[in-house]
Amino acid sequence: MTITGRRWASVALLAMGAAILVWMGGALSQAKPLGGLDFRALYEGAAVLIHHHDPFNPADVRAYYDMTGDARLYPEWALYTLSLLNYLPTIYPFTAPFALLPWQLAQGLWTGLTTLSLLRVSIVMWRQAEKHAPLVAGCLIGFLLSNSEVILGGGNAAGFAVSLCVLSAWCWIEERWEWLGVGCLAVSLAMKPHDGELVWLYFLLSGGTRRRRATQTLALDVLVGIGSILWIWQIAPHWFSEMRQVMAIYSAHGGANDPGIIGSPTSLFGNPAKAEGGVASAIYPGMVCNLQSIVAVFWDEPSFYNPFAYLFCAVFIAVWARATLSRSFTKENAYLALAAIVPFTLLVTYHRTTDVKLLLLMVPACAALWSRGGPIGRWALGMTGLAIFVSGDISLILLGHLVGNPDWTHAGWLQKIPYVLMYRPVPVLLLANGLLYLWLYVKSQRGAAGTSPNEA
Image (cartoon, rainbow, N blue to C red):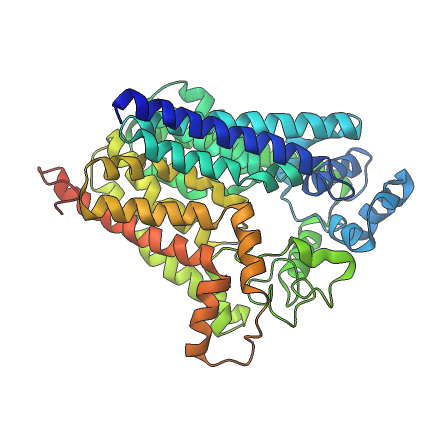
């Protein structure tokens, strides 16, 4: 196939993925009664705050649902989840304008803007990757888009947080619209700081104008944080302790964010026989995809798996940071550095598969490595492709039906390894990608002296 033919095929794959995303994601967002459930929490949380009630107090939130009559729209288990708001105060300045609109208009606007954001940054990353390998760029990004329906269907804030983070990285690497990058990353960090914090750290460490932009982003977020806390404090002076209690409920054994118990036969959230109102239908392998979800299979105690995950990731993040400080900035190094740190960003703290769309930042480096040929290029494409494939919404649902819900709680350590591979595939692949790209990033220091990463 000629270069022109490969490029047109790549465009077709990208367009097909975008069409599937818009069609299926839009349909899911309007499904009753659970369409837009994640955005409902953001919308009602901001509305509670605007009406001078405490969004971090579950009793106040539930009372607001009862007062407005919205409680009748959802089953009891969904109302229980909606009353437990675990977002930071910094998200509410950006969701409050939506809460001033009628629900249908607000949801439609939120879904439309999320869709446009995802499509825009996908095109931006595709353009960087297709310069090296058009078919690789079209396949990877097209498939990622076609398997991102849950973000639109639920209205999760990750749609905005990931898109704005990726767009900011592109602005600073390409040195175009850098002030736009400052604003985008500031909003991304305000919404979901754990999605973009290590991406921000890269630009801080890389020096030059990028360090200045990262510092400006931090200053802007400090202002947003101070304003948000002052706003919250007037209405809910005990918001911090209340937010910690809500997070403890979510992360407790059997909670929705528990990395160890989800999917096990003893879990309320993972067992259809115990789940109320069909909540288990939303649970599938790898839904919680941080490193804790692997470690907890072997030792399901937060006092062990949290410190272990933090220390384990900290070692590799320190190696990555040292490599970043020791080299000059180039566009190629920048995309390789981001490809190395994105997996650890997702592994070190709590993340779900909606956040894994941050893998968009890995595609340019993957395409560049593939274009050089050799075993390194094949490994990069294979590992990145598997991570994008397995973390897709449709892929995980199909995998959930295939592997079922095995009883692993009384198995030995060696017997649990197959369970990890079957029921924790996303963090396993994230870890493999992180180690591969970090090795290539460290070795690329020799490339500055005339040795390519493949030769290294």
